[in-house]
Length: 53
Image (cartoon, rainbow, N blue to C red; front, side, top):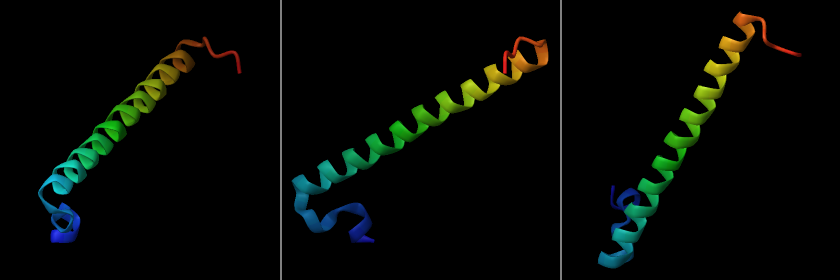
């Protein structure tokens, strides 16, 4: 488990490794929410008949 926690990098490296992993998770959550909200807005436009495609 030490490989996945970054323990092999030492104390300072472990902190940086964990912070970078958490930023990656936040980035995926933000971009996933943006894609989901675009899908919802597209569905609303199609049901109202506003689609030009």
